[in-house]
Image (cartoon, rainbow, N blue to C red):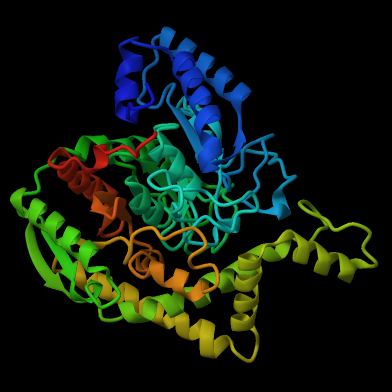
Length: 483
């Protein structure tokens, strides 16, 4: 059962080959057996899962149908879940039980999903390796000595290890797509505003976006269908009709214009990954796509702009964690100022503190114009580059990451080296565009992903291209040894 995709599970449940309760028990047992190797979960919700599975079986018995009805998933531990610890991978929220469900959680629960637990993540979603979590690093099932990518590494490792078929995740600078690439999954960052952020604990509000992580584009289409939609509780949610993503999967790629930016193939890209990207281009050409070289001239400025804007927003968002209202509080403070300082100093990890300090500095009176305002101007230039490119092509293709997954601890002493791994993914967040990573091969036994970008609200186009590619390749079917 654990090797079944979300689509196969939906068909199996519809055909009464097994019940949701039986499937849930199998997966819970598998998590208990294998997750100690991976550390992909922070919290397990066995009682909730079994009660939801029984309810889903009852709904099917009464004639109800639905692709997600009875499907087991897990949520990244920054989606608020009522009465269940929502820690954001931080000591600061280790004792926090959310009093309500995030919109994504509520929508998927209404669709009949079964929540197996909350997955591990970089603290407050800050990281590209899933090593900054208060609960310890997550291991990559393809090689337990390597990182799974971050910040959604717990969701990625759990799905890649076949502990469950799919999971929710979030992407602020590549945190769905990069772990998808590192663990041989398909991961989709929707258009900014497509998926509600209400109840999703904020890192950088103008960049964060929730999305699905799964093994196939077909599964991502199913999960995104349940997640997407307008939410009046979220002022950044966009009231745009949600299409049937599964219905567009089988469209022809004949005449599809694919742009390949020349800036992607610089000295920083592992040549073996470059070769796999070119192989994927050839595969899509066979399916009828037309390839064109394009340019994104301001891409070189994206990383410095991102690492001013994101920490600036983080410093503002995380100011609420002060030891007064909820979360961690230091013991025996001398006064209110001491309580603030010690609660934040003891509750936040090193990477979070680093980004708060960088962001507060960039927003300070003497440096706002020089750093934050200039970064926002660069952001507009990056967006303009994409708008110009999409006048010429339908999608943009390139590598998801410049390198395969690195060894645990290899970049801990050099945060900037880790930041540079986001070079291909952060531009989509700065521009608010949808992006998808799909499996495209292996380097030294470690998975490699190819990234697709599309115009606003064209998630269906990305899923269509990825699905057609996956019908003609088998990279996404490979399973890590031992899992």
